[in-house]
Image (cartoon, rainbow, N blue to C red):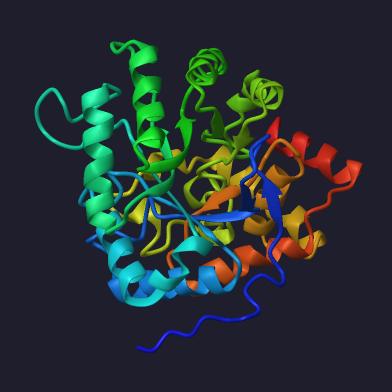
Length: 330
């Protein structure tokens, strides 16, 4: 299949500066957590990545354990990059992470210097890259001194294997400590990747304030609550959805009657705005100028195309925001 790259790929996308750094990210970034692993159709993954790039999505987010099986998303992305987009590497922001279980023994999990730097080397080999643009500590390690974890991130930059560093799943207090250490080392933290959606709002209890104070960008993952904030589950659990897959993270028991009621009400409001529920849920996150980008997944070009339409309507009226709060707190 011959792939063409559009010369109009930057015409519609909006780019936000990532905290106080010089880096800009598209307001929509593509995450490869799901749908790009060894269990998924390779050709579909290829088509989604091409469409994303042609739509101005320059940021592709991975982690060492994305798949399944772990590592396969990076391998597939590396194949697609080499086959189709290698000459556009300098137009792309590619990120990866280490922090969750990856291989047996005491050195394949958490936040030690040994694990993070070994994992980064493995990720670069899988993707056939000389460097990544952003390397994350995927989660805080309660047993490793935070200084050690942050020094490993600093080393990744100084060794030329990463241009920037970030953290993910760190609390407000942990984020404050991590950024202080990184600042002292001369390698600032430029981005935080927390779980954040209409149904998961813990970041509003201090973390966003810390990020603003420290000049750190924020890129929420699971902004659609694993697909719950779409019209996909309005009539039950469809075949092929995340909740229907044994290896998925969204479980059937999470789709409660209360959640379905809220989804239905939110969907009604989205229709009044001329949007799909997914478009409104993504726009709702971007209403806050502390949010740099939203990290979406996509199982098809059609789904990605639908989500990209959020660019047509990011603004909310006060009445709309009040109604959303009423629904979510009901």
